[in-house]
Length: 542
Ligand code: NOJ
Ligand code: CA
Image (tube, rainbow, N blue to C red; front, side, top):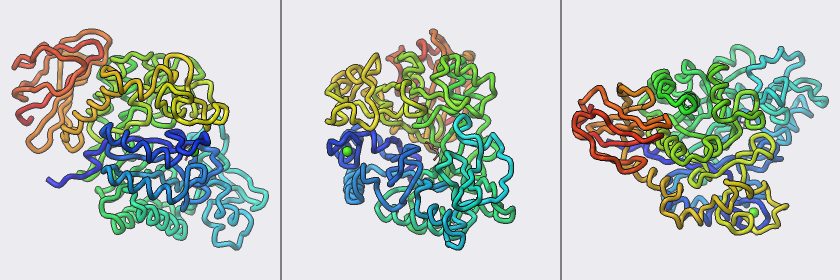
């Protein structure tokens, strides 16, 4: 069977700015990242997703782009980017980049022309209105920060649309000229060797507020245009969409397998946290059954945390409150009234068993797994920093000053390093963990290695297995004549689980939280420690 690279991938996301400072100015850069490609290759990851690195006033961590055709001079030059791409390719690592097309920065020359000259071709690059409609509060992306979707501009004498911060005017995707610009931008980066794009805020791109009804209908077709362009320029490049939408809207993105290749699995992520909070498998059963079937060429991207808040907006209020109570009980840990601004290890009170359970689970869910820089060493967060910067502190490389991230005096760092407490860089860093066979970093490497031996999870068909233990998620993924079975005990107590079906023949142990006694052939009374997990190769297909 032909392999589909993104179904076999292990993706790792990072922000160049906070990964490694190569030139000693306190800001991470492409030179520093390139120097650490051997580290990344060694960990087993196969694909990087880089957060925006374009020139930007940087008022939204680079998601406010001023120039789509360049590298932020603070992070390096286009030459540095090309060398980075070369070195990544040499190591077989693919690169996805963020494509922020719902909006630009208000400093982008397009917006400057648009607001100052009604005759300019750029006027209709954005969405203007003399009499904007009332804003639907559910569409305001940052509800506690912004209170309207429209901002009045003195120069233009009109209001412009912005779903995010008011300094991020929304582009008018219904305008064919804007579509052409976006394709040209994709073409530029494809020529420089990237393997695809993360479409930022994809659900807002096709929202259509303030755009004439006739044009609204054609908005979704822009994804087809992007796909057509991509495929004609580089056959195996992919589109990965950020769309946190209800299950019934998912087919809009995947189409018949001819639109978006990959979607972040926001729904399953939220049900996974509900299951972790309740210590039962039922929310995962619900979450998995609730996902629509997706076309064969399409794929879910599963994750634990990413660079934003852990959003819980697909759950009911009371479910959200359960998760807050378990993992973010203090108000300062929450954000936007619907999310958590913490990394995983502090949410789980540093319980190594619980952390392993969560990553083992995420890696075994049908789809492709995503890690984020620092996950492999169990980095924490800094709640004294504002908003989402709490989870965006620099990578902790060693116990040297500034965690080995940079040589500048600490007050000149782009973000403070976590230096106090259990997650301080003296306790949590790459160099120290690599010397300790029992450390999380070596466990994550093993997880990646075993996951790569199980293509069933990436390509296969899911079967949820019935058991007699409500705290255990038991699932099987089958693919061609192969099958893997995974058991995850969500509860903090020993448990013994019996699979109701014995169709799986002999099960060979692949992975687990510790070596267990061999299984009985009837699959009865399988032991699991508190937060224990076991993966098996089934020798007979389901
Ligand atoms: C989603 C990004 O992940 C987030 O960080 C950003 O603020 C918004 N899109 C706006 O671009
Ligand atoms: Ca630098």
